[in-house]
Length: 137
Image 1: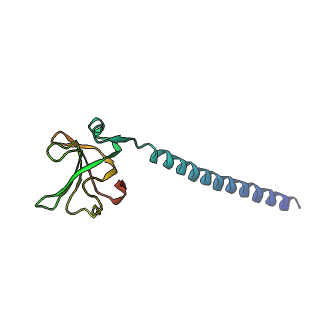
Image 2: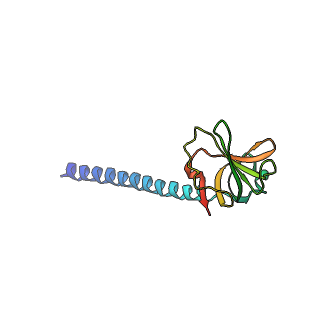
Image 3: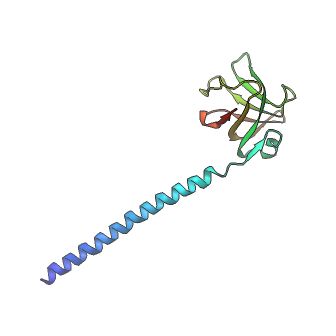
């Protein structure tokens, strides 16, 4: 009888330990989701004029498209505020990129997310993923 009680006790302890492990895993998943939400909300939204202050940072830039130009080698440049070379910011889609920018026209207000880089002293974002285009108005 003592063996049965001891065996039941061991099973009970092991069962409780497993349940706590599963609960900890569930709590871990919940906090990962929470952290993901926090991470997603970390993006600052700035104007095209302010973008130059965020070189090297991943942010959202929102502004008015002044021109969309595709070069001879197939790269497309979306210039903001003024036409090239007086633009304040640009988004660049290289020819091999699968990003669809067909809806972006002169005069649109768009928001894009990405790491700000500097090219010829002008801030830019390289478009590598469709998810970088946040909105087109």
